[in-house]
Image 1 (cartoon, one colour):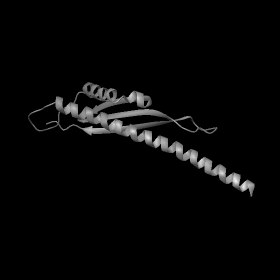
Image 2: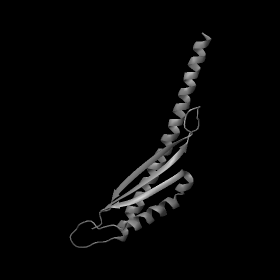
Image 3: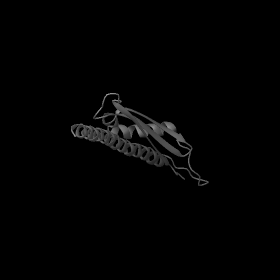
Image 4: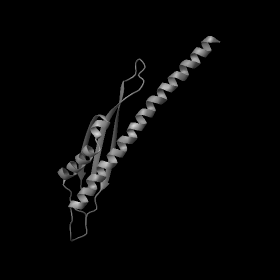
Amino acid sequence: MTVLIVGFAAVVLLMVVVVTDISKVFLVRRDLDSTADGAVLAAANGLAAVYAQTGDGGNAQLDPDEARRLAADYLDTVSASERFDGLDWSAEVTGTTVTVELTSSVELPFTPPGWQESADIASSASAVVPVR
């Protein structure tokens, strides 16, 4: 009976460790997603305010350097580099679409032998700037 109780306790402990680690990664990923959304919206709204194009009613061609600057300003404003370990980001413009990609690593609360001490996470957000 003792072996069964010890085995059951070990399984329950392992489940607690796994659930805690997954929960930490999920919460940081959700925060990274909302930061990427904010950065791409800041870039798209900033570009929409800068560009005005009259004429055929089509979409304006956006400046990639301006999009990167606007995204960087937003990430500095929300102190993203302090909130996320090893934050790396990029902002790209394809036609009238702005895309921001963020990557970070998460230190896991529990690291049993043989497990990684951290997990890499990434988030991407896109927005179309319909400047007419």
